[in-house]
Image: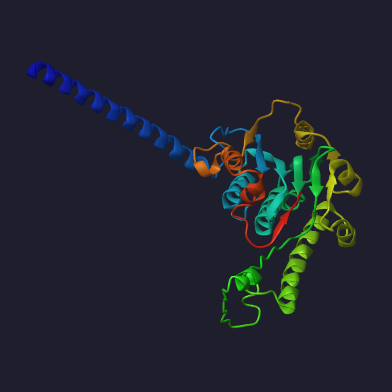
Length: 314
């Protein structure tokens, strides 16, 4: 009986040791994958080939203000001698003004030395249109929603609700405008005028970007820039896009610019589109929306957006 028990216990120890080794191997494997992905995050993809090729950058979903990785990757591709052009694939309703502006400047710098073409999907509006205008050529589908040139600053005011609850908030400020972005303080006429001035200045910058990129007068852009969106078919008539078509049409334009006859000329992702990290998992938002319901969908989509935004409101 003791011999059987000892044999059983010895077998259990072996199983545990084997399990520990397997778990350790899995941890080491996934750790190596994560490190490898992190090492390639700011450069041309892991598939990078050391011969002439086009880089493809996909901008989708809400544009956040922290776009440092993308800006760095564009700079590296701009400076790389084997990168000949940029295919920018946009499917976004817009987002943060700062993020859109930083991407606009990065694309503009790239376009001064190498050709850039934009292919718009369902949407390429607001901040997404802002980052697209430095390209030499913009292709949109007839049904693409684009334009929506404008700036939005939302300032919640919960002061009245707090008052009904018997809660008061005293703000000790160094100036009359210091608390005018605080939702617990009532917005004064002077505060509204100050915030409107911020929006107007950001809007003026947006208009200037579109006028320069699309070779239009500022008066013309302002006549189109009341915040409304246009379909691709409407936008081409207004000079906001250049061609109706899909990504294949954009690739064809770029090949013609580069005088490339070979349709199989390499097109390499600028940034890997897949990640093991939960916060970058493409299905995360769909899961959250399914759990929380449609009421919170717009909140989930706009998570992390602060301050002034250029976004298409549907």
